[in-house]
Image (tube, one colour):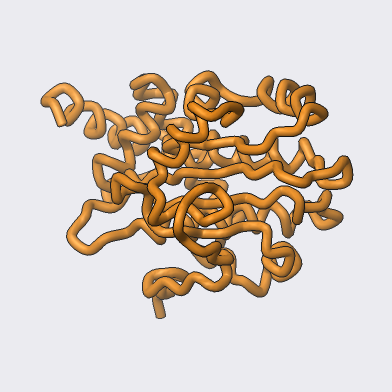
Amino acid sequence: MEKNQEMTPTQLRKSIEKLGLSAHKYDDSTLMRFLIARSMDVEKAAKMFVQEQKWREEFVPMGFIPDCQVGDELGAKKIYLQSLSRDGEHPVMIIKTNRHFSASDQLQFKRFVVHLLDKVIASSFKEGKEIGNEKIVGILDLDKISYKNVDPRALITGFQFLQTYYPERLAKLFIVSMPWFFVSVWKMVSHFLEKATLEKIVIVSNEEGQINFIKYIGEDTLPEEYGGRAKLVALQNVKLEHFPPTLPN
């Protein structure tokens, strides 16, 4: 990190303190995510950080969302968590949209978004590595979807959570097997996305795109049905030593 970038997290901590919170327990890489998300504007990054902290305290009071609070969503087996991408850095999350139906319980769905993002991010933690800058790779699989699986509100909610409460956590999102009728839905959803988010989204629509998609993720991580050699692993079947986190006594 360059000298001027080293100064910026320090400035951000001071701005956060002026807003009534402390950020001393957070490392520079965590604070840099908020700064990058707000184009290195310290004051805007401070407001974003405070907003995220207050939201997390209210919405995730235990520090995590347990399986029992999102049982219906997990039961659909629509999210899969693979190993790390080819570069060895980013966990790969697959969303099977043909197993999703519009949620009647919106609160549970929002909790599910937090549950899966927290768990996917936690799956990339490594001993001895500075925690705070982990990013994820997503695959939005639209294969075999019908109109009953189309849920713009769910997509918008997921992206808004990423942009507002998980800044700079998305490394790349690949959209595969997009049917013709979904193009108009995607255009509508795109209006809710920030430019920085849109730049990380790749629609795989031809042979060259498929080759680059496989190369980026790696055949050892990518399941067979997408051109790799791995098996699909349901989110709830992935056991992590550090998730859920140990609660203080």
